[in-house]
Length: 356
Ligand SMILES: Cc1ncc(COP(=O)(O)O)c(C=O)c1O
Image (cartoon, rainbow, N blue to C red; front, side, top):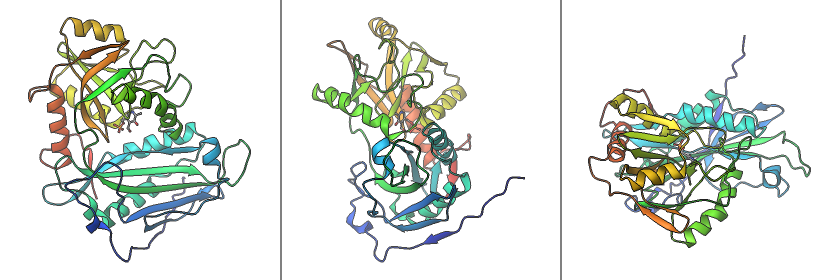
């Protein structure tokens, strides 16, 4: 029989909350952190008891192996308030499962679900006042795990730290986004880390994204690493296209993050009887659909960006404009439904929400 370890949780509260320093009506993404964080270490081949402590700096040696050899991964999820003021998490166990998929690929220890959920629930309960009530706002939750061996030499670390901290956030994009199809650089390749939330994936994307931004685009639209022919994903979003009467999205593979928003939207679309195809989509197919006026909508989907309308696609020096979104657009209906489920305004028939 599998032995289940009971984890004790020590809670050290702040003496004075910083919540009054925040203007919840104007919250930039990712800049303000709530009062507490959850911290737990892995040592002697097992996870120790966790602690909730005031959010703040931790002392660490410059020799910790995460800094040198990149054993670092993270997750991203959100907590919401319903109309009665109750706090809810959206599909947290899916984030936990994905974290362990990333950990396996990066040769890091899996974190038990009960330890993850205990720390998460207690943290959100304690900082529940930090969950914004404003429209389009939420409490962004950032679990992060990294290697803490003080050792120089390439090998998997034996000690790790897992932290969860949170930040109240407003909208990620305040306007429809423009994306530039990447034809030179590669974010991920088969057999690599693309399907994980390894910190390294984001480092690989920074320079190309900066180049794209200098040309006036918000994000890259990544293509496959062999031919730069098939669409993968964009920034921190999976992508979806409405072509004719179907929604088409790149199938997940070793190079694309299997988004929880993407999966939720596919379930919604199927429930609504809207045909959805998960397949390879070439840039040529997309532009042919555009030339025939069959490309009705393009949007990015993800926890941070929610559903972000793509207004323009740049490719080989040309810009392809997409139709303006209207209340009858599919992406509009998706965003409204997801928001309503998350804030308790409509039934959660898929059982996605977890009460804190
Ligand atoms: C590279 C990448 N793709 C897709 C997503 C969307 O995933 P999710 O819907 O689980 O947030 C994210 C965000 O986590 C991401 O970082």
